[in-house]
Amino acid sequence: MRVLLQPAFILHRRPYRDSSLLLEALSMEHGRLGLVARGAAGPRSRLRGLLQPFVPLLLSWSGAGDLVTLTGAEEQQPQSSLPPARLLSGLYANELLVRLLPRRDPCPELFKAYARLLAELATAAAEEPVLRSFEKCLLSELGYGLNLEHEAHSGAPIVAEAQYQYVLDCGPLAVAGNATGVPISGRGLLALRDGTLDDPVLLREAKRLTRAALAVQLQGQLLKTRELYRVKRTPRPE
Amino acid sequence: MAALRCLPGVGPKSAQRMALHLLERDREGAGRLVETLHLALERIGHCRLCRTLSESELCVLCANPRRDRSLLCVVETPADVLALEQATGFQGLYFVLMGHLSPLDGIGPAELGLDELDVRLDAGVVSEVILATNPTVEGEATAAYIAALAQERGIRATRIAHGVPLGGELEYVDGGTLAHAFAGRRTL
Image 1 (cartoon, one colour):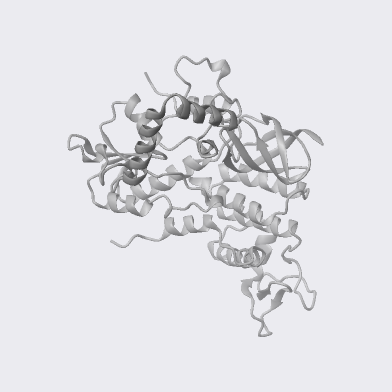
Image 2: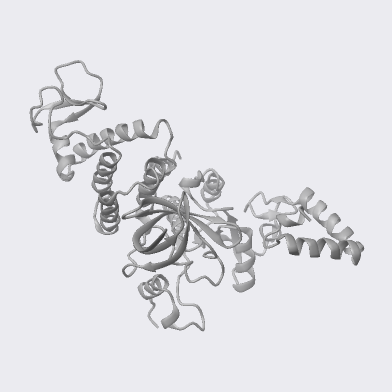
């Protein structure tokens, strides 16, 4: 099968043989896929600088099965790479996608969310709200979307002033029961739904929620990028 | 022949040629090769200070008292040290990461010996860290990470420039490089 000029992003690359690369890419119509780029890491390759994560590309490939062969790559728009301080967040999103998204599962919505994530990471003042809304999108693409609309038992709409316990395979429960879930305020749920997380308190609540939901999907795997954040933030003992 | 194929760029055909050459025409050379490889494998380890490959506990560069200890250049591989040594008049010391941060391959700060780098920065001798990691996404992420380590201690961190290759023509330079070169322009 030949595919021509498909919008895609590289998620990960590793050297393969002498001068080739093994790529992991997220494409718009073909989902996540593995590609071999023959000769792309050679000293004279035109593609060397191009096949980088976070660059919007148009990829062409041929072949079927788990690993296809890259036949061409072009830049989709002038390069708008992430500023160095935001690379870690980008790598975090890539790690989530590589670990959670099954291959060959078309996900145009997620692709758009990823493109939006990169654009916003490059420009937005705060990175956390952007990451949270991407995580929300990823969860719903995986089929485990968060219920941010209704109380799980009664079906009543979420009330901003109320407190909830979010039980992962059930939904937000009004606090009355002694459910063990992630505590979150009604305002936090609504802000996550609408993508209006500006308040640090709500951000923390939303982070706990998405983190717990992703942990279930990761089945105990630890994310390596999270380690990098942690090391960066712990103050050094003098 | 199968043993020779572990070398990069050596396929079955070249392996056969090499093996036949050594056995038929240059047995002496083969003996030298065996000896050198054996010695190299036995003796060469990592320098205690900069982690590059070295025969002694301290590599030649780290042991040289004339080099400027306040400058520290961080690179990804020993080959990068050689390239910089040959091309630049850099008189400081190096720190070789032996890779770059790559979370998806399970390479984090510990694998790159960044705790050693921490200790070295804490010692207070270094006044400038030059980040000469590759201009790839992983290299940039590594540079940003180390720059943060340096800045926590009030040490100046600089990044090598990206730009148009000497003798190159703008028309044929890829877009990313050109954008970087343009953004990093200097007053003359």
